Amino acid sequence: MRIGIDVGGTHTDAVLLDQALTVTAEIKTATTRDVTTGIVNALTGLLETSGLQRDRVTAVMIGTTHFTNALVTRRRLARTGVVRLALPATAATPPVIDWPADLVSAIRPSVHLCHGGHEFDGRPISPLRPDELKRVAADLAAHDISTVAISSVFSPVTAEAELEAADILLAELPHLRVSLSHQIGRIRMLERENATIINACLLDLADEIVDAFTGALHEVGVHAPLFLSQNDGTLMDAEYTRRYPVRTFASGPTNSMRGAAFLAGLSDAAVVDIGGTTTDVGVLAGGYPRQAGTDVDIEGVRTNFRMPDVVSVGLGGGSRVQTDPLRVGPDSVGYRLTGEALVFGGSTLTATDLAVAAGLADIGDPSLVRHLGRDLVRRGTTLMAERVAHLIDRMRLSAEPLPVVVVGGGSILMPSSLPDVPEVRIPKHHGVANAIGAAIGQIGGEVDRLFVTSPQMTRDDVLDLARAEATDLAISAGAVPATVQIVHVDEIHVNYLPGNAVRVIARAVGDLDLARAQAGEEPGQWATN
Image (cartoon, rainbow, N blue to C red; front, side):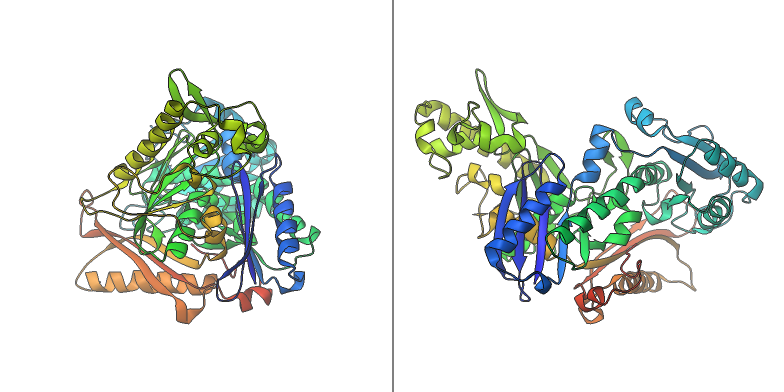
């Protein structure tokens, strides 16, 4: 038996799945201010409802907003050293130059430009200088900085400079926590560097969160392996989370999309996930979220690591309703919904109140919203449906109609049909699709590399190599070998570089090998790249 948990802004959902991935129990509890308490409450309620013995739980999968919240609030971020290996190149555009001022103040980066880096074909820009890096280590020690982000020009082509620099810094400061850009971002230097810095400043928090989650499981008597959701629909183990917390960003919408695909039996569809605060719309391709093809802005910082292509709007079950002029959201009562909404005896008119008054939902006390004008209810529910339909239309890449799956606790806001949408499905267990998506998560491996084709290394050779590397990564990460499949291959010819340069992105996924997880293999055995 496995448990899936997803922490949202309003609710924390938990589900229990058997070996056949059938939902045997589910629960929805209020998200608490410290989040972890909400997880304990959800776990306790789920186990009591199901009557399951604690020792029968084989794995727990959690989707969390902890790390995103830390970046949003500019709190609990570690002071970070930033080392770029590129001199004499790139000096005109130093690290964090375009970051929001308040975020720069929160991490107080110690920036160091050093020699190193490579050209697109692997030729060095300049030799690495060990003495230069030893001076960097001395400066980090003087400022009591224990986390560092190392980036190098074209490190996804060859990581030699980053790895050597890390060895030198660790020889001087063995306690240093190091994030390497080739393990986090993609080809473009500045965006990859930004993602690496974000990851580094979250490393201390990652230790706290993993320890807190593990403690929460032990508090309720569960000692099964812990996994966290990544933003590509796959899982990572606790030790991998300690090294790459940035991978959890946007895992909430991803979990909902994967859960929607599973519940609706569709591999290609648009998914509308309506929570208590926001509505997220994405597209499934082959059962996995379509990845963003452009830079992704995270709290004012441009990054280029893998993220789902999702558009969001401030519309959810807790959205406040203004009547003159009519407006629904974006501000929300959030996790206070059950105390502030009219149908629960509160004094705030919310989107949930409109849905109950319109007969779309039967929750709370409907008599408490009977006084609402019929015109207000009609216009309010129509406005919500039109906003969601507009988001769906924005996500279409062709004129071909896509079936739409509506999930999330806030799905009660939607009617059975939407404007210009040919088919709308609201599957069973739709309210906890996010937790189901976490529970069914697979293990993945991804390769994103730049190759130079030649008579000795043809296009077919390059693609075969990328597929094989992605498959090996998934297996080493903990996937059952017989279940691993290539789910995505993207070939991009890089015309602005000399030679026959081609960027290849290959992703492989397979089922989680729970036997290996329970055997307690060495940390890192489950890590994916």
